Length: 276
Length: 131
Image 1: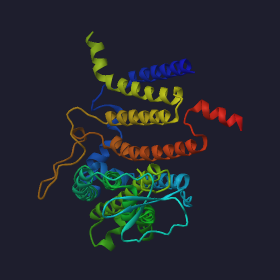
Image 2 (image 1 turned 90 degrees about the horizontal axis):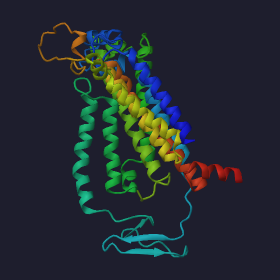
Image 3 (image 1 turned 90 degrees about the vertical axis):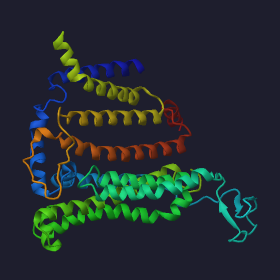
């Protein structure tokens, strides 16, 4: 099997390397991929959309359909993880574990007949739970707010600097995952509930498609943002810039919520308990 | 000799990406463990992303963000001054979709482990034949 694989891979690689003979030298400005279509984007994106970051302009305006379905793919991946892994029915555990909040002592209750200890003094924890480290917890507390502000900046400033919905959404999602790593999964889910992250990822796709449908309703093509000009009271070029911003917000929302949902489902194998 | 050096200097980065891609492909075909196969898939995706970003490069060009400012006169934008934005756009979405496929693949691996208590492909095949 390994020898067959090696022969196959070498053959395939050899063919691909033979194919590069046709390529123009690396970095040549006259190569085929540099003279077709992309010069139009570079030379006209500013007058068409007034967005200096050409990547953002192409992503959300010229190739708007592609990005919309890409967002739908992300949403579908999150849904697939949910449906594959999520266990909504919990098995009754063999023993219940309670932690005394003041002293940190842990009670193991093996008989089901023993009642719950008082709510304010004890909290129920999972058997896999490990006490979190004070250094990691404090560092997380310092790091997470700046990361989230930076994520919002990257989404909002994607027109003028490297950034946009996908990047900012991933940064926001990473900050939430950092919270889950520093504390535990349950305290993360308390702050961003499962239903909320599900609604956010659906809302992101809905915002994108909704902006497109609004353009359609105003008598223009789907995702042709210049149709929004009468509503926003700006000229059509500025309306395209603002339309790009709206869909980027939708993309950011969907990506953030989906990253968090995928992490939660994978890290706890669908149980959403306190362990990693 | 100079011609050969020019070919190597103009193409070697593509060859590196092809090598990386083939490492990923070999991992997907030959490895027995499902997680290693998934990692092979990730390496393959990364090689494609590097290849595309490399295609967009132009000598003497800068990143595809136009210079602008308040009151700055818009001189005519020349395409040779900015690298190709199109590969960046395509790969931006490909990276995020890569994360999505990785997530779904790992979810399936978790389910397979729950069902068969193993991630080795031959052991899974043995267990399915027994049933």
